Image (cartoon, rainbow over all chains, first blue to last red; front, side, top):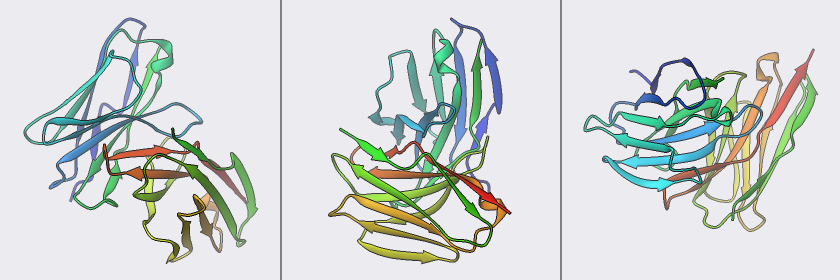
Length: 112
Length: 110
C-alpha cells in the first residue's frame, strides 16, 4: 500500500517565479495538510484541506494557495517566490483518527 | 498563542538512555505527537499521547502531563541509527492542525 507521495522531489526556482507542488494522500485518507520546514526548524502549518474545502490556514501570505481535487490529491501554489521561501515542503495525509497523521517525503524548494 | 519548547541538541552514548523534554503552552489541545526526522527526510510517526501517563513502544516511550503542559520522549538502548531530530507537536482538532516545536537534534556517539 503506497504511502503519501509528493512531487517533485527537488525544485530550483528564481525569485519572482511561481511553483506548484503536488501531493497524493494515503488511499482512503480524505484530508491533507501542507507544512513548510525551513532548515533547522520545525515544520510550520500552511493549510489543511478536507473534502476539497479549506479547513485551516496558518500565518502565511496570500502568495501561498492550495486546492484539493476530487481524488483527494492536493496542490500547493506559491507565487512571486522569495529567497525565504526556500524550504522543505511537507504534505501530511490524515485519516479519521487523530493519530493518523503521516508525512510524505517532501519537496525541497530552492529559490535563487 | 502557541509556544512549544524543546532542547536544541543532546548527545548520548550508544546503549545509553536519553530523555527529550517538551513543554507547551497552546490555545487548545487534543493530543501530542512525537516524530523522528533524519536529515533531509520527512518526519516519521513515533507516538501519540492523548491521556496523561506513559506509553511504551519498544525502545521508545512517551509521557504526557496535560496539567503541566509537559511531555517527554524516552529513547532506551540507543543505537547509532537513532541519531536524528525529534519533533514534539501539539495537535488541535479545530483546524486539524499540528504545531511543532523546533526539534531536538540527538547525536549518538559510539
